[in-house]
Structures are given as C-alpha cells and as structure tokens.
Image (cartoon, rainbow, N blue to C red; front, side):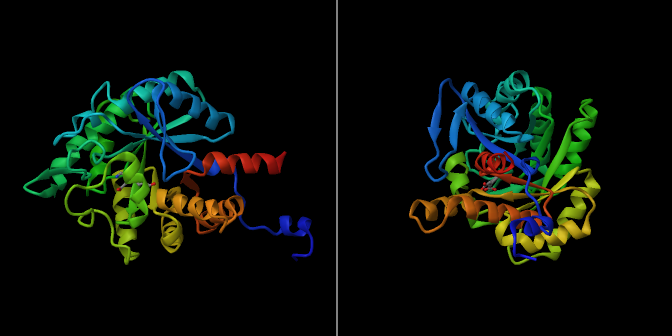
Length: 317
Ligand code: PBG
C-alpha cells in the first residue's frame, strides 16, 4: 500500500488544509512599527497599520482566522489597558474588521500582558484572586467584542470565567460573539518565547496555582467539561506536542470542536534546529502539524500558519 504516491494518497488518513490554521499575531502601539521577535523568526511586533498588511497576507492565503495579542505601553495593578476602549487590541480589531473583510478575528483575553506583576488575574496580598479577576476578564472580552471581534479566547485559566464572559456578552447584546476557551492549558515551559515577546513573565512566583499540572489528564476532562457547561463554543488544549494524548482524550470525550495551540516554544525549537541545519524546517513543520490533527484537533493555532499555507498552496497548485 506504500508502493506509489497515488496509493499513499488514497489511503492517507489525515489531511492538512489551510482551513485548519489560526495565525497568532502581536500588536503594539504606534505607526510603522515592525520589530522582529528574535526567538520567533518570521514574527513581529506590529503596529496596527502593518498588522493590517499581515492580516491581508493571511486572508489571501486562505487562512480563516487570526488570534490577536496586545503588548501595551502601560501596565498597572488593575490591567486597565486590557479593557480600555482605545487599547492596542481594541484599535487593531476595528481596523482589521474594516480593512480586511473576510478574515475572522479572535482575541486572546487575559490580563498578564497588562498587569504590572505579569499574572493572568487580579493580585491581592501576593495571591491571585480568582473571583475578583472575573469581572476584569469579562470587561476585557466585552471591549474586544464591541470593537468587532468575532470570537474571544480567554487564556487566563481562572475558574468560572467562561460563564461570566458568556453572561456579560449576552447582557450586552453580543450573543453572536463566540468563545474559544483555553480549557486545558498547562503550566508549561514551552511558553518561554511568547512571554519574552509579550513581556508577560510573572514578576513573582509562577502560574502553577491556575494553569494545569503537566502530569494530569483526567483533570483536563474536568476543566473541559466545566467550560462546556459554562457556554464555550470551542475548547482548546495547550501546548500541543507534549499533550497529544490530552488532545485525543478531549476529542473523544466532548462533541465540541477541539483546538490545539502549537505554542511559541514548539515553534522556536524547530526554527533553532533548522537554522543549525539539524532539521529540515518544511518537513518537520508539516509532520508536526499533521500529528496534531491526527491526535484529534479540528484546528491548530500555529505560528507556522503562513509558511504551512504556502507549502499547501504549492502542493495543490
Ligand atoms: C496569556 C497567554 C500565554 C500564551 C497564550 N496566551 C502565555 C502564558 O500563559 O504564559 C502562550 C502562547 C505561546 O507560548 O505561544 N495567558
């Protein structure tokens, strides 16, 4: 069954398509800013004007959606820039919505880029206060939705935030805005390059009191089930590569679409090895993305989206 490319194509069980990809992008204040993120070749801090160009590139390659991360100028205890009407993400969303029709806009909803301590929630007396964080997260989600986001993606891992966000969106007549929940988000070392890029490294402690223990898989089902009950439309497993078993388990257990986040460290390590000539970038990238789909992910958030879309375009003529 492997003797010719025709037969191999006929019996292939998993196919990658550009429809599977969501491109993460980073946006900063200013004009004409395109600052390379050193550990993530091909990725940049982009001001809104140049972000629009990047989004057009994605759309024209057929990528259905981008997920937006903001890197603000000012941070403070209440993360006010996270939900400011003229915040960096809010402005970028309305620009993309106007200038790049046809592209779906997802926003990452979290506080860690906006708090001076770098934690994903509100901190009091040196501890993350779960319940006090919910109101700020819901406000952030609503402000993104009002700016024009089609979907919000809470990545903070506070308990109860999906329900709070759903209820608040509905109260604000934003019931058509969907929620992609970072449901099984692990406390992972693979976020290193992202935190450097987003300037969101916690200034004390770590995220182990709210993100999941890498040793657990049954807990992932509990987390996912809670988010489904609270109104999530898509559930996510993150990271992807060290958690392919979790993706498979979640895909078997729930009947919602499952997303997997092929995170920054997974991207950087392949690029680093390729730069040294130790790995073939294109083949490794396509194998990794295929394995994430094979594990059961319906869609993949990946920094490889543009490169992989170009490979598929070439292949499909
Ligand atoms: C914010 C957030 C993080 C990522 C996505 N949203 C970082 C973190 O939890 O520290 C990681 C993305 C990546 O590594 O590519 N909470």
